[in-house]
Each structure stands twice: as structure tokens, then as C-alpha cells.
Image (cartoon, rainbow, N blue to C red; front, side):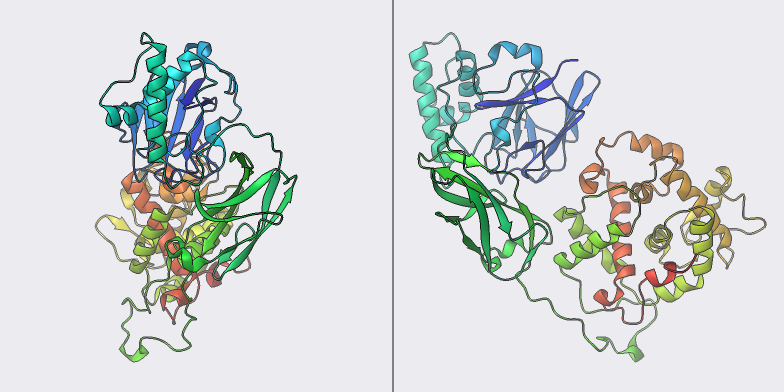
Length: 536
């Protein structure tokens, strides 16, 4: 099978896995860490048999192939020019068609070592300058045509020479193009790239990964072999925020200088060393940090809304929790689910949608309604079907808010139809009871059997995706699963269809309200964990 190659200005990356993640953060297989136009998780290339598909993950600034914006996915062909975020460019090719264009300093076709595009703090194209002098003529022509074409054309009004052109003219075009790219890259902290003989190393030891920065903090660095280092540059999401000279390379990080980062999602702090010739010495991955620039108000000791004036089922509270708080509650919610599955729930758009939707569930009285069915739910889901109890409660919260009143053809706490339950024989344990019976025994047993078929029969024990597919038949859920990327841990970017995203958001919105009622001003309600954390 042919491997695919992404060719950048001065380097290349072999695409030899079924799913290759592309984005701004360093945990992507192809990382444009200095290009802020590229989203954190921007796109994927999926290998399906002998074909390669480019999938845009609803990036902020989009992806184009040969100048056409990608909507959903597109089949790639050799020679396709791909631009991520409008600024980072590469060319797609297959291994055997590019074997003759391998030059020293780049990865050979069929090898999977990182290209220059993967170096931390360095973008593959658009925000950096690389030397073309070491490339073979075919590589130089590629760079001129693709990396510099726009700049040369716009600046001079002339086309970049092709392979049949005079080499002197070609060199002149490259020089002009380099000047244009330098102008475009003004404001970047570096303009020099090449192999440094300096073997210095450095890593950030403070702050630590996972820290929340709420006040000025001193960045502490451990370093070795730094005699050849001119300075250290600290990058926050690929942008320079501080620099320091040796020997300790310390600097101060003040969250008040970055109020836009108090958004509840992780931000990457990295260090790059600069040698005495101005060349970068990229270091390992950075540390993921959260920021909080506002004082977090402590919960009020008294109800904000007078209880005498509060009507059951009416929205109450003191306002929405911050996005930082929503992120923390969402992370804790994920940890409640057992199993070996891990989920990335740090996407800002996802958290904003959860924050917005949570207002629908911030109503008083749900825990009292849920308590009525505690034994029924725990028996059906936990004892009989061995399903994590949070799933049952959060799904009921998301779909009915524990109100059993029939809505259209949907019945019971989990809003299933009698026809769906009967046709799939999920009512085998109900006896004479129905989904609408006050005890909700039939509704719970039917929903538990159905949930088990989804979670274990379709998604191999993955309760989160069981929640997203809830309402589909197992056959339809399996067909939908087949459309998902192989790596489904990044929930928001894996679940792309509007209906399924809505289901995902509702599940998490209901869950964070159910587990954190005080944060939403629900002073009368208790966390649903009080109901399912009982002796079984």
C-alpha cells in the first residue's frame, strides 16, 4: 500500500496511519504550533483502503483544497494543494510519485519521522522562513510554486518560473518570494531556521501541567548545556509571551495580561531556545494550563430567590457558572464513568454549548422527582443490567427532567415510544406494566435493556457514545458509528452531525446541573450522586 506524504516548504511528513490529526497544538500528528489561524484540532486525514480523505473538523478559519473550501470531507489526489486556516500550506502526494524529489534534510518517502513542520513553535508554512538552498531543483521549484507563489504574484504581478525557466530567474523569484514571506511574517519572534549545533535542553518545571493560573507565577526552567544559548522564548499557544536570558531562563506569567485565555480550556505553554546564531532549538512538548483572571465568587449562604416566591419547576439561580467552572464540572463528570475510555472535553465551542444549554436544566425540584424512582432505576440499570448508575439518571434528566408526562408518542422517564420498545422486545420483563405506569418499572427495565444494547452491543462499553446515540435503533447506531473517526476520544470533533451534537450537549448539560445544583442556585436540590451512591 502506498503511503501518503504531506510536502511542506523545506520538509515533509509521511501519513502512514489510518487517522492523522492536524492542528495547532503539539499533540497533533502534524502541528502548526505558531500559526494562530490554525485551530487547535483543525482537520484529519483518514486512510480508507487505498484512498485518503481530508476532513475539516469545523475549524474556525477553514481548510481549502486547490482553492476550494472543504465542507465535510474531500477525496485527495496527488498534487492537491491544501491550505489550513488560510496560511499553512502543504501538497498531498503519494510515496512512489515523490520518491525522486527527496532531498537531504527531509524525511525519505516511507519513513514516519517528524518533519520540520512538527517542531514545537514552528509552522509548516505561512509564519516562518526556511532555507531553500539545500533543496534539489525539483524541491526548489515546488517551494517557489506553492509556498511563495502568492507572495511573488501579488508583489510583482509576474508568475513564478517553471522548470523550463532560466535558473537565474528562478533564483531571483525565490529571493523576492522570501522577502515577501518575511514581510508577512513580521512580528514573529524568529526569522532564522536551520540546524543548530547546540545541544541545549530545557523544560518547564513550574507551573506544572494542569495548574490554574489565577495570579502572577514565576516560570521555572531546568536546563543543560546552555553555554551556546542566547535566550529562551516562552510561547503560549504558539505566541511569544516572554523571553529570558541565562543561566536560569526565568520569567513571570501574569494572567491579567491575557484575559482572553480565561475561557475554561487548556492552553499550551512551551519553551524554545535560541542559539547564538539566532537558530531555534525546539524542546519537548509544553505544559497545559488553565487561566482565571476574575475572582470567583463564593456560593451565597442564603438563597438568592426567596423560597416563598419560588414556584416548583421554575428556573432559579444567581446566573450561569463561568466557562472555567463549566469546564471543571464537565471534567469531573467524565471521571464518574467507569471503564477504560478517555474523552477530550476541552473544546471551547463544546463547553460554550454546554454552558448555554445548562440553563434549561437549572430548575428546582428535579432531585425530589428523581428520588421517587431511585430504587426502580438502581434495580433496572445497576443490579439487572450492570450499567453505571450515572448513565440512567443523566439520560433521564436530559430527556425528561424526571417528568413522566407523555410528550407526543414518547413515554416514560427516558422518552421512548411503545412501538420502539415492543418492536425491539425491550419490554420482555414488563409483564402487564407499560411505559406510562406510575411506578416506571417497565420504563426503567426497557430503557436499561435498550441502553445495554447500545453501550455494550454497539459501542463496546462506551457509555458516552451510548448517550449520544440514545434514541436510535442498535442497527442505526451501528451505521452511525461507522461514520465516526477511528479515534473518538475528542468528542466534539468526532461527533459532527447536528442531531448527535445536540444529544451530546444535552447529556453533559443535564449531568453538570444534576451533580452541581448549588452552582446553579438550586438550593433545594441535592446532587443525584446521593441517589445512585447507595449500597447495591
